[in-house]
Length: 371
Image 1 (tube, rainbow, N blue to C red):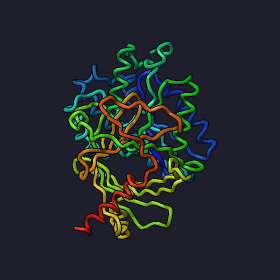
Image 2: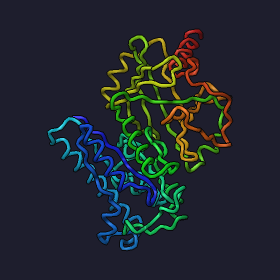
Image 3: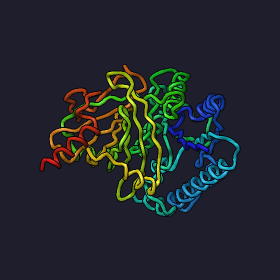
Image 4: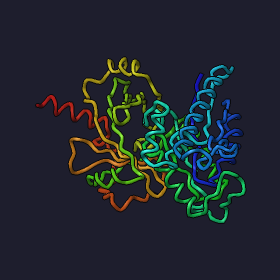
């Protein structure tokens, strides 16, 4: 059985309720059993359990995170009993959404209360899709009438939307769906992003890479919309024309492991078929035995940066002090990219072999043997 756990999140009045209906309709027709985990905050608040009825906001948040994780565990347990091959588990908000309603100290206590850590809790979801509040770019459609738990003004909704996006920064598969089109087109873009992620037909990914001047690390690490991730990447032996790697990804000593296979499409290398699977520690160690001896493992620091509703990944390598690599995944080849003014782009390097991680790993091995 294949169970995929996806978070649908977003600011107030972003269209989540309608999106759930679209997901049910489209993915049931594609052969998925679709299960929905209701938003925990709405359940608690409409039931009389709220930050203003509990002893403190932290008391309430501890109740909420516990109930949220318990619900997810129950739904996963139920899913495994079903006579089906593919289950799509849709979470109406996930654990990290709670971070937007707490300060750092409160959130740390909430995480400790469930005996967890940020990496395992955040990355337990396979993908996160954030629908931007109507208060940003579609103010005429913003309303609080369709949710008894919603009380935010337009200004408060915009601020909350920012906090929610920042809370999920660092997740490996975060996509932001803005209000640049009509509402129907917004939901169509959500469907297309989900279809691409799930790899229905061919999971084709469009990625652009840019060589940038070495970034201001202090600015990145103090940016509330940026999250620092440590990555160790090891390349494996693979058939000609195919790239295979294993990766540890995490922070503060907590890591999630993945195995990824990539096959390029076309001569420019802009599009590729990519499949990724989460693996456990034993599988990771087993695959390490098939490492490509011609390439060194790559250690890098990744800064996941959200700017103008775009999700950038900036990779800083220990062997470069003058440059870094910025990547962004696009839903369309001609999609406009708006770079932060603090980032100095030197040139686009999409498709350039010399700047691929696999080539860098090979260069490092040659350098090591040369010494």
